[in-house]
Length: 478
Image (cartoon, rainbow, N blue to C red):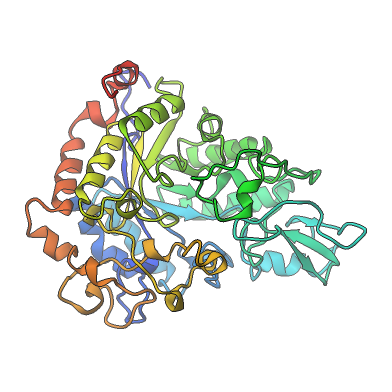
């Protein structure tokens, strides 16, 4: 972009992420819903956000809470209806907010009609829509690939006498993107929501679309980082050079970008998931691919200082030809930064770090509750529902502690989130940081962040990081 070009809305955008199960329950079933999001959109607009990323709300058996899709074109009844989503879109646009929809395109639920047909045999119309492989001669799995959620990536299916690939739960079979029909079907799904008016997609694990068609083993990881997010998980013991991040991914992203560009002012935000994140970012945000992408640089960090911020920003690039990063400290998959960084006694310190990130070239994601300075919730084992947490407990207690309901009213049962017992408990300590209590305190975390974000919107040099070259070449951050 030259100095004379008008910036796109997503450049420098503050994107507020909502985990819909935990935002606001309007039906009294203990689970948040689309009408609840619509009701609280003014809170997000007043905060100074430009867009809202909504985690999955389409039909699902909910084994991975929406990331196991059984119908891409239907809203799950737990959250409402297509009409409710259209009303949410319309209300957001009235408030000047864009809506970014989470799209889980690498895999489906094993209850999706595509998979139900595919598993029935090797000759049907969708026989090759998923990744199937014969066993080795001794009956064991085709190769050494591992699932992120534990164990082998392969699950036996007796109807076909073959294994199918799943990078996550065994109930989440991977689509076969080497089949052009699968690519076309996925693009049709995206076209459906673009026609409805969504302003873009957050692409879940978008480096996972393609696999090595020869099913070669992954090599060992000779240096497992002891601070890695997966340190408790054998997944980190491999270098994932065969099962994810294949070069064919890039051509498909170009097809998806061409579809998106046929609509006005739409954006693609990719989740990158690989050790060599800087290289992957440059490849995935190259021209005609993704406009934005985020990695785990700060989401998984236990310590953040100026040097790490400077070096990471420099590694991702600052010239006009470089792709745009999307910075994040918190989201639904990681422990909240206030706890992870040891700042529970001073949550405002995390607000300062987030403010620093928003001054870098790129967009920024703000996860629900971050504006309140919420710490990680302790969820007792008998209330843990995250399959990832239950698999690796007690070494890893899962993601539920970052997914507990939003506290809206400190004096109400369940923080005003629901009139009944919610799907996850609301920690008592979160009530003291509820929205209504912080709104009346001029120096609260909520008010500090709101003042900063609204001020930043009027500062082109910060929003577009016009001074990025100087700050990255300077050593004043020490």
